[in-house]
Image (cartoon, rainbow, N blue to C red; front, top):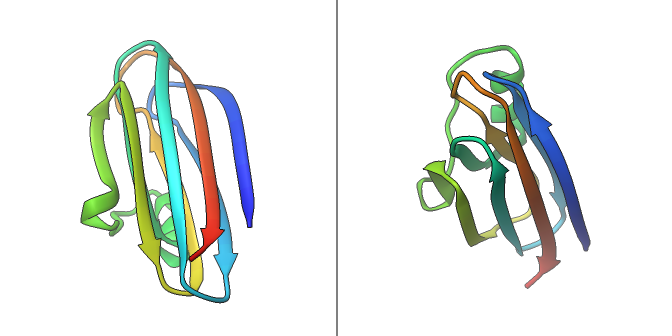
Length: 107
């Protein structure tokens, strides 16, 4: 379906998101590497939960695709059709430089 690769600086308390939609069962594979700064938290969640994130509210994510305070993670998650997102969050008081790779493919 799609692959995305990018490098970003995330300010303290900042977030980076990407989202996708799939009509059928699919697999998302992601890798996040912190190149500079402290660890980040990485979540796969439903699109409706991303709206909660954007509004500064609590949110739900898939427990087997939740990685908190990591400097590197590579993971994959099988999902049914729907709208989803990947969230990378910097919860520390210093900026981070991250490389993010996210690929979505039909199963």
